[in-house]
Image (tube, rainbow, N blue to C red; front, side, top):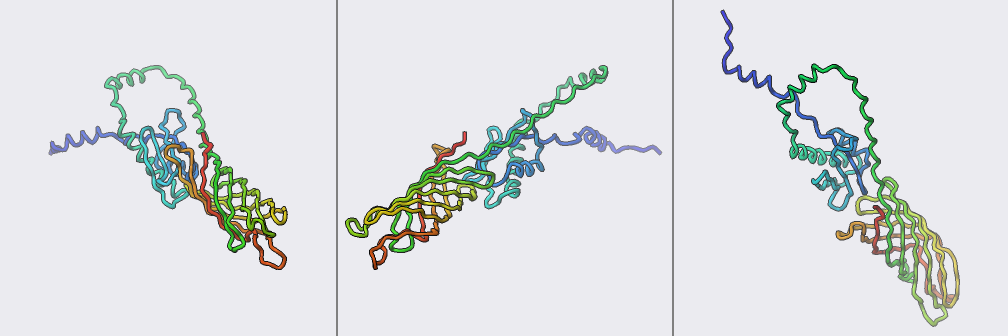
Length: 314
């Protein structure tokens, strides 16, 4: 008895045999990071490499990640831009969130530029190549090394403010401070020069006093987006004039919390506000014999300031 194939299955078998064996390969990309980010370039490359192919070829699409602002992490690929909100995530967890956004941009780029259909005459060319004599292939060119991501730029800032001790004999002190902040990986180091001044008190009296000091600080701390925390020691050579003239040096340590915001019209310029607490290891006071001090430097002081900073990056 002869076997008969159902006619409807014939076209189905033909279509199955002619179907493509696999989907096209994913787009290979190059990563470039800039500015302050909640993760390292290595963490981002590890997270993105789990979803996309990495390439060192000069013609591969470049994905630029950064900088971070109050809206989130900026991600761009060609003309496509997106902002990724990572919240409080840092390190590899934040890098994975950004890697998902990069994969979506790469998929959109692939959809917008699909692979061109093969030339109908290509089979003829392949047949001719098959009949050609064998040749020795030239060694593949060594891929260019991926350049290291640019380091975050230094910041120069100037701030005006006022400080006050907790005692009534510790008056408001005007402050003017300038500092340079250098980002080192996830940490910041800063050097600060400042001037403190108290206007003349009890003018014309025996306990008249005016105070001026020059402050030198060295600080280190952390930065997360627009928020910066610095901690470090200081010394402040001072001079008191009035009923008595006296010079000396105050010393101590302080902690400062600074919150900044970039100006839209000038992205390299930041405005910021700061709050600082200083603890002093020594103090000086002015008083008449047998009387309470009319002026004293603080043991513990709080200070508020506002200022402007310049990003020295290119």
